[in-house]
Amino acid sequence: MEAGGRRRRVAALSAALLALSALSALALLLLSPPALRAGSALPPGLLEELRQRRRDLRRLAAGGAAAEGGLRCGDVRRAAGGAVLGSGFTKVVVRAALAGGGAVALKSVHGAGREVRQCEQRYGAPAGCRRLAAYKLLKEVTLLRRLRHPGIVQLHGQCYDSGGETEAGVTAVLELGAPLEMIQLLQTPWEERFKICLGLVELLFYLAHSPLGSIVLLDFQPRQFVMVDGNLKVTDMDDASTEELSCEEDNDCTLDFPTKSFPLRCSSAGKCEGINEKRNLFNAYRYFFTYLLPHSAPPALQPFLSDILNATGNLRYGINETLRAFEKVLHLYKSGLYLQKRPLLLKAEAYKCWPSYSHLGCLLSVHSPEEAAAICSSQPHCQSFIITQQRTWTGRPLASFQSSPTDLIPDTTAIVYIKRSASLGRRL
Ligand SMILES: Nc1ncnc2c1ncn2[C@@H]1O[C@H](COP(=O)(O)OP(=O)(O)O)[C@@H](O)[C@H]1O
Ligand SMILES: [Mg+2]
Image 1: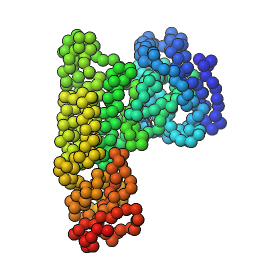
Image 2: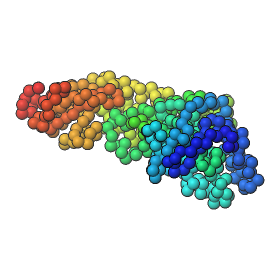
Image 3: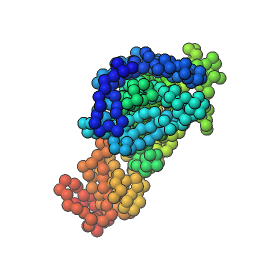
């Protein structure tokens, strides 16, 4: 296993990492798995689990393009103290600095995690158990390499720790994100929450039509996602599957959730039709749409959003229809068409209104000065507003609403609109 590697020591490394081209490393591991070489020493049950994971990995890696370029371990320096960004059953993620500046996330096997501990209790074979967990990370790396989408965290490379180039020491070098904070998201403006849901729908559309077939995320939960620059990205892919459930009759195809079950059809090819796509979509509905989509949406868009919630909550829509419905809402919102249906009355209280883009005042996105005027006249505290130069991701300008015209700060680039009933009684 040493032959494929290129050792490079970096002075400041807290743990010396070996540089190794990502794909050649993976190819070597697949050709000569230590699990099998050292197989006789492992309990038969563990050996069988290792074999299964290796088969799964090989199937996913087959036909994949060679990875060109990519970061090496020598390019990465674990940040002092290696701030832990998060951990799950199988993996732990720490922040690291790039030699050339910038930061990345390093993902490796979580030795103290539930997966490794449970395996150790069962088989009493620490090294074999680490390797078993490492196969999950290798599977994730393989998937990340083969799938490219803005909704999937980007893989920059992979490397091995100083313990040698065995799979147990594998580390994935990933784009740095921020773990998802649902409570925080609930307090952001509707436009940002809509963006997250739209991003998720675009991701599920990609997964349903991926080069590897329809992919299901079996462990679909908010903690498997991170935010990068306001965009949602999936990071935990080791529980993804490209297999669709096999069946003999429709009765074999029930899609079960704790609160609901959906009977599906068994196709003539002996597969439960669309089960992967449907499982993803219902999970998106129950973990994301129900919390993020409806509240404080522009009232004229609410019927469209209710329709999306109903149609995904009972799986009347597939992912294609769902994406179309989201794109329609986006179009109505961006073009301001929704305003023709009903004047907009956003809820906002005091002069820190909610949900504002700024904690310091009342900053809301608007389609036009007319919409801002409607908002201002609906708010007793509003005396004036400015359309700022700032724009949100949909291209809408941000308007700053103020309670007193005397607070005005002179600015030659901004037009200040003042309520007629306000003391000055004119528009500056
Ligand atoms: N690229 C990343 N940037 C920042 N944090 C991340 C990143 N990837 C994962 N995390 C955090 O690490 C946690 C564990 O990673 P995950 O892949 O979900 O491991 P597990 O398979 O053990 O659940 C995630 O829940 C998330 O909070
Ligand atoms: Mg996870």
